[in-house]
Image (cartoon, rainbow, N blue to C red):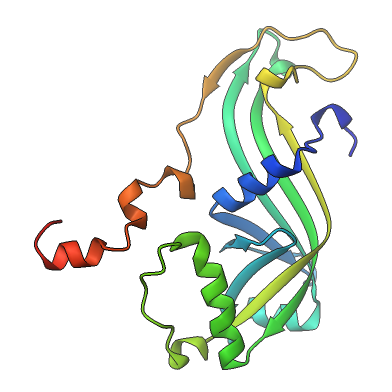
Length: 201
């Protein structure tokens, strides 16, 4: 990483970040340009769990080339300084190079989806996944080969590039983005549907 001062190496914080974020970007080989798409994901500690239609372009390209790059980011604040070159952002960013394995066996897809759902429905109040639905998708496990992370947060003293004077930034935070932790507590209430059926919405 060229900017060593921006390297993010606090693994517990990186893990918490990846478990909280909702969307990643996945790039797979294609000609003449990489094929990139956004995916919901679950991170297990060494693997990204994603899925897609087994009949689409992404599945086809993934079967041909199993190496993928995954990127996850979160903008935090806009930084403004009097000099134009010192307008910047606070952010978190993770890039992972992975090897993807594909499972299109019905029972394997169901197991994969149940594991992935733990991130979004830890209350486990959902109905079993039907075989017909599982037969429409492939389960993809992206095992991390290499991962790097960056962050630029003023509270950590990360101001200007090395060798330059610290810029007198004014900080303008963005509105909080979509995260699992940003949901209201009742999103994880296992009795929500029972309450609705009883008229207590």
